[in-house]
Length: 138
Image 1: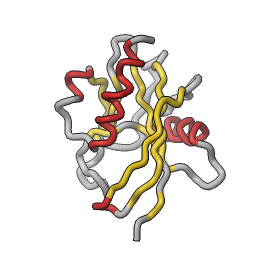
Image 2: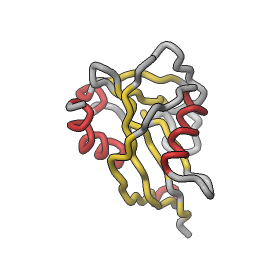
Image 3: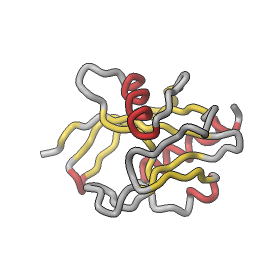
């Protein structure tokens, strides 16, 4: 039986158009060692925007200013019996000095060309490809 799991992801970018990605731990329950967008599961009663704000604070101690919803996809993860809607948000990082990783083994800023070579979940990579022109035009 497939579990409905609606989630959010943030494409967090800097002045140079680099995107911040988490490096999942080697023992993560799903997609160990993958590069991952920050975000998480929408809790009952939460809006996607409330979730992205909560998740980013929990994961990297950053208070988002105005995350912009840019894409919603339906995803299917047959390997882990999950499916649902994934809401993608973007925001430019205005201050990198207080970022503190609270989940994963590290985080790093990647250029578009660099991230195309990383081990990432397919639907996140496809979303970045669709959304990236919006980022470089901001």
